[in-house]
Image (cartoon, rainbow over all chains, first blue to last red):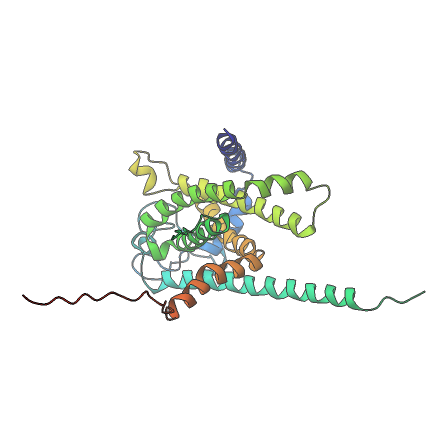
Length: 128
Length: 180
């Protein structure tokens, strides 16, 4: 009974977030934000292995990936569909690196805070 | 009389192995270029199940912090809870957008959705965010992780490396048989 209640609550929270996201996208509220960010994620290579061609008058910072259609363009381009290779492994290593850096940073920071707090507790209080 | 001692399942051990599996799955799911799109999509779907198990295993903590969030609780617990909420939202967004741009899972079930660039960008952005948020989520539990790593990985490895101590055995009775 407890399990069903908990699963129901998780489902409700999920539906709430998913519904809000869907509504935001459908209403166009997220369009501007996403189109501003979209350029960061342009594919570096097209299916023929060449760098994507810029349109006339378009600078590289303005480049937007081609329409999300077809196998060779955007998300699901051949490299992603087939998988494997050093580029893919590089992503795993990069993410692992980010995790490691964050882990060490938080560990160092909280150890430092704990040490400072302990030192303050130990130091003799001035007697009145 | 010999008594057989069986290792009892303790919650810390279960949490450790579930979390380790989740961590490995997230790392792989975040690299579709490495796994390929089919594994990426099916693994991510399985990851959603794993995340639900993770939530259920830590349910009492969630309820306790939620009850005391505005009252008497530590700031670290508050920060942790806020971070976990953001992680949950990012996870739902990445899953939803992933399903909507799916090219393997949905067609497998006979559904074909029209490709939408907005969902694709949202999927990538939320995946990028998850790397940092999940990284912080893991990092905030560094003490527990180091303890569990020592307990469930290092100690068993050291035990394996040691030579087993010879137990004194009872004298074996040797029966000599003579050929007749």
